[in-house]
Image 1 (tube, one colour):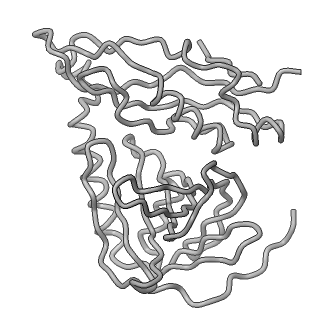
Image 2 (image 1 turned 90 degrees about the vertical axis):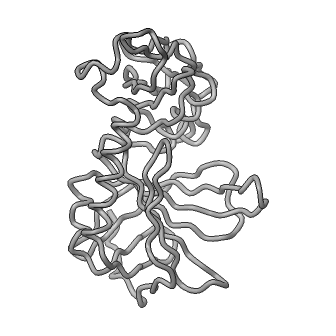
Length: 268
């Protein structure tokens, strides 16, 4: 059952010299995600490039961050990612993030790329990001096969940690229970998407901890409108609590949940 939420110009060739890194790649094994990141430019005005695969490995997020004030609200625009063999058209989000400990803010552009397209980065020497209405940004790439292999190993460990497939291998005797359909309302429709009459259907992969809390939300099926997908995850993480999964002894355990489809549409 679906969840109902109601409420060609040619491009110039990219120019400029790719930014060079001044720090090595860092592969961060976190509880709810795998993340690789690297700083480019210089320490006084760094630009960060980050790569984050979805836990199921079906897609990747590419993030470009700068230490500057960003918008409190995510803004959507069009652009592309180019690994040297032609642009991959992509919608993207621009948003600001504040560090709660330091108070420092950063502005991010977030691109989402399918795993089949992301495979092209293994042999790429540089990546070019294009955001409509802004200058291109280009980054030199190194050691990509090793980095992608490291992310793949991290993702395999992440799947093991969250008992992916636990119903089949015996780790999960009772699956988690919860009614995602009840937490959405028409007020959740993003203003920008409503203004542009944008709609679509999203589906999400959730990481549910042993207390029933949603520790991670990732796009399983993209709507084609990133701001809708972002809002879906925000609503789920803020409001949704599950009865946690249990093992054969009745002990609560970590698990994953794929939500029903979330349909975003403007009612006339």
